[in-house]
Image (cartoon, rainbow, N blue to C red; front, side):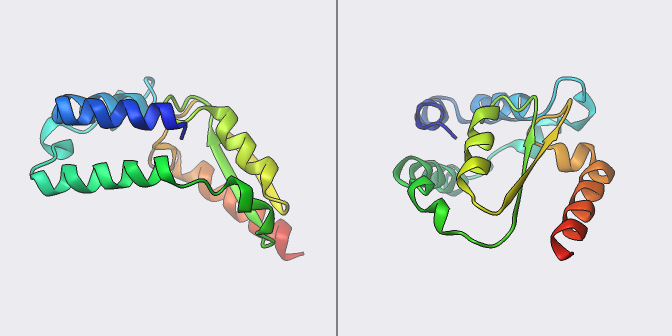
Length: 136
């Protein structure tokens, strides 16, 4: 995730936590699948601790850069990228794939962040096909 996006989310989360969480989920889900957006109670950060943990996670994303070390990973990897994911740009997933020496890349069309929930059969099929490929 680009650092600018993470920093903006941190600021928004401190100002209006509930609205920020709702906006994030709306962006993360694909607009063609409104049934996947949970109700407000489901996504509400109930305690200050949950917000604190989320902020710590966002700080970690800002402070950590694994890209220089990715070339050291030699095991097979499958990078899956949702075509319509609005939070992390498609090019970031593509860059990850290009840095991993033994990786394959799958594009999940017409989906966003929660594509495993929306298209589980499609995802399972792609993973099984990939496992078969690397097992040969």
